[in-house]
Image (cartoon, rainbow, N blue to C red; front, top):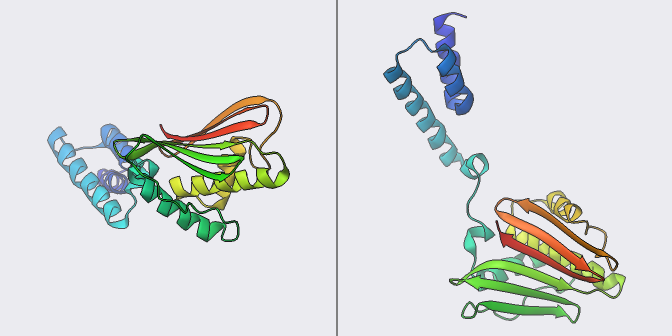
Length: 209
């Protein structure tokens, strides 16, 4: 490979795949150290600028927003209701009452066997729990839908298949189990999802990692 071709490949990698470009530079660059540093800085700066313009930095470096920019209870209510109206318009699963951030916890009862609980720190949601104790298939189906809406609200970048994958990871896709004791955990972005079930009583938790 000629020096010209090496330089062209190196610059291309630095612009489009910086980690590989830096490795290539270390192994094959014919420039002195100072020139390499300046060239790497310029190419990486262009890479960052191009991805800021395209809105891709969250995908490249990972988003640190968590809970969709650390939502207040009322912001969560609005986003959850938007998800409910979009994804389950006929199930009447909206949060009709305001959720205050003045206390450290809030609670909403969807039904006698399905409850949402939230923990608030400095006015922002730190943890959400769904408590469910289904006694029949309809109540189990309702719980699954609320879990799906919660995931859609906290990880809006996930499509239906991805949300289903979260529920599959937690062994909850078909119905909430009414037998046995188990604990499962999975993560998406900066949110950790977990489920604990004991003899029909299940607690689904979403918390910042």
